[in-house]
Length: 535
Image (cartoon, rainbow, N blue to C red; front, side):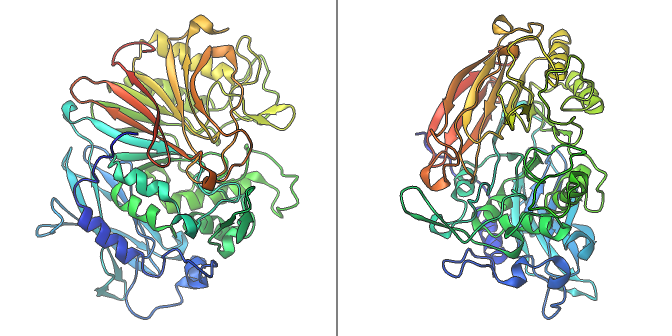
């Protein structure tokens, strides 16, 4: 087990802001149903107008660059969002940014863009909510802090990644203190968190308790919106709001910026565009309708730049530039994919990325001058992920031969990376609910026109853990490390909760990946050298 680092600068501000945001939102130790005022949809909450506005759901920061960031908040009523930033937590000299007037159209959430920030510095901020009828009446400030990306290479970068939160019936358990993994990751003091999809389980209702195999009782905090599958916009919003009931997550959000992507469970398991459901739990059978509602709620509850509240036509895929050492390429393997199938077609123009996203990714990778290019993939490449008896959900099709189906797009991308001599690509993903490291090598592959690379898998954060899946040898993966449970849907109380950590050394440029388990143990470490192929 490695020694944890300290939580760094600005702890007092973060903890003070976290305490204020926790008012009325502490995880209950008894009476596990959250009061209606906390779980109700926006319009119902807004009827309470006495006193001052309040930001009980904390603050979040997203997509931090060398000079910009996005700050998120939710109010309990209509309010004007105000963000003040300072170089110190004393706020003796503060810069004020006025955000949007937030109201029921965005479920009382708002995102403000901060620009002109100093690079490579700790930024302290506080969010105020002003009564639109009396701007002098403001909320108590909610404090947070984050570091901007450096412009000088020697500062280095550290971040964590994982996915899969509150799935398979395992929600906020007060007996475990909620989601303890977020407090553990916060203490690692990363520059940011890459949230690799399945940020909610909209198709995973929660019950008040579950009996574990050893006879122990797992208890869930429950809300009205988590009692059934999400179909309405209010129900999707309630699923995102549910996770913010956890104090660990709110404290984490106040200190660690995020880069967020989505996968399937933001809508429902294994979905694809155009799908029509045959599921008795749903009255709305069109997945396109459900996905549009989910995407809107996603854009409201995360500070995502291309999905500002009210812009449901925005896109999830993007590149976040984090200084000279790192570019993060965020993929969307949901919006543009073709239908799930046996995945053996000899031609597949749409694939899992769509032609437009694939062209964007190839272009942006070629333009990147960063030492390391992390490809944040919401699904793994060579791991076989079935969808029923005959269809496949991810890229691999369990056929070890030449690329077919969705594999054709990945082959095109890997060929492009090799022939354009793009170095420093590393694939990070989650989705399969165990942790592993795969090295891909053309010497082992049926398709050999690519340069060797690594793929690292982490998760879940607080969800069921599952046995390892098979490998598809089309791109020559070798499983160098793996930890997974022996049976399906192992609860977080039984372990197998994982996150990954990446350190990029500013002097040498070395990238170190550590696969960690909740509790702090380092399970696997790999050091990659800059500018080398497949190191």
